[in-house]
Image (cartoon, rainbow, N blue to C red; front, side):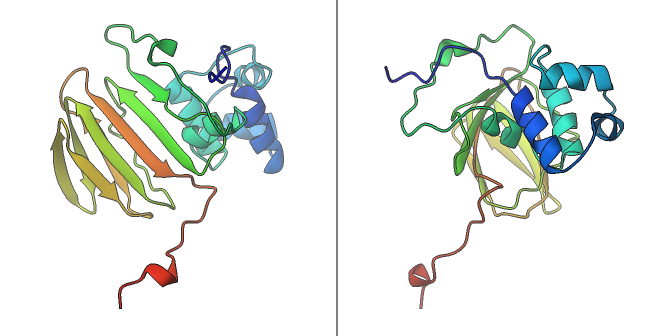
Length: 192
């Protein structure tokens, strides 16, 4: 009863909604992403499931993030349980596992294994990175920060950053305020 649903996440409808909201054709998204029109059509019609790199290319072409597309792919629930064994990690394969389903104000993802270190991120709102196992190197504001098991890194919204695993089978949890929510400081909490 506490489990959300047993079927796999379907991102095609979220891709279609975003593309139509931007009034873009499949051809334009294909050109921007470097992916083919037939493949994008299959994704939108749930006949193909994009890999993580392909989903990131689609998200870039749509001016959003893969996390936002995944969140929009599933309706929000007030109580939801995600089981650890919902995704099985194959040896040598990287995995990104959502820890929160649906379109919420808070996103949490677990990254297991390798990560695309060449990809730079900049989010409008704050982000927290926690290293569960292994190690990572985060480049932010011109400095490299090495993190090991149990270390946490906080990034304010707007900070450009990139990161990479430095140890095989690294596990990292990233928690962020959603890009569709504008986080503002509560004036009553300011120090005087």
